[in-house]
Length: 396
Image (tube, rainbow, N blue to C red; front, side, top):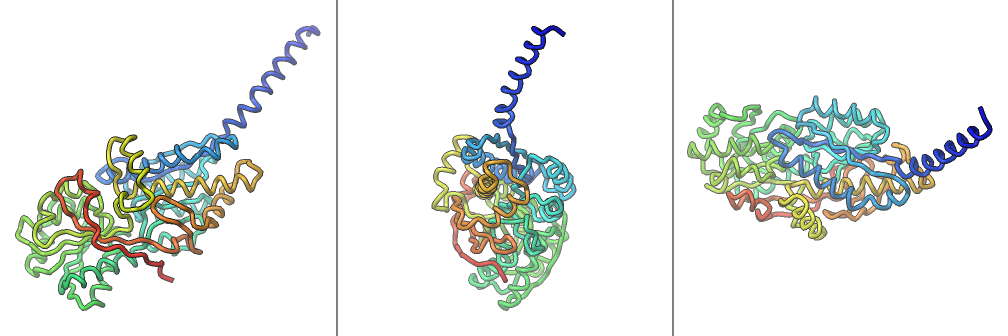
């Protein structure tokens, strides 16, 4: 090899090192995953959870970018299905660039999926999951920014008691979420002196005749449904069409504009339809005005329930990753460091509230709402009036 060729090769190698060094640092990738139903009949809410998280990443990742990190969203469709959620979770934890997960929408999906996150030490911040087991397992990796069903079920029963309800028929969808909250509602309803005429689980989604026969025969003051709007609205509509004119009450799984696409005017007839929720309309929170404006501008639609919580859950992940990176000398933090940083956050100022997690990952104070369906127009869903707002600490 000639001396001249050696010089040329040396120059090329040096140039390559000069290029690859800074580029590699600038292109160091951090990913944050989301899991929610992006397809199927619950996607109207699940897509907006992802959209809220996406907006937060776009608006709040600058501090990490200044450290030389490129922050990316890794969205996954859990299809509101536990098997899909777990399969996605295994793919998520196998990607070392993913340092946190925002999700899920369904507790029945979150609980088995978060077993995978826990085993792999990957932080999970939930914008929507309310089943007590989400946090009572005591996993350091698992946190949520909303309340719990063992409180929400009580809130619903107390509201019914305040409406002088004396008898109730309880239906649930047999999921961890729907059956769980229905059981908490039933227990509290009995404590308040209500007569529970029936407690039935069903996976039916189209024809509720077999359930409607005992409901109509008993003619309860209230029909309570624990589960999702895609079932509840069909049941309520068919009950009205068969002459039931009492009150309907459901949970935050009912909180979707698609409920009135299904039930229409029937949800307003009789003594009305109400739902409890851990997520009020985005416009009800003092800090969400900019979020709502930005969301409408970006997606040409008002945000669905839990979109703002998706934003806050992503914000918490970003803030914790930033803190962990700073503590590591502005270098890539470990998953364990991110997990600890999330739990260590104090009074994180989100758009839906200030968040501090207790020792098992529940917010130290959570908001609960009772809302009345006021219009058959899906575009006016976010205008449904809030009839009760409560701030309640988690059970000890």
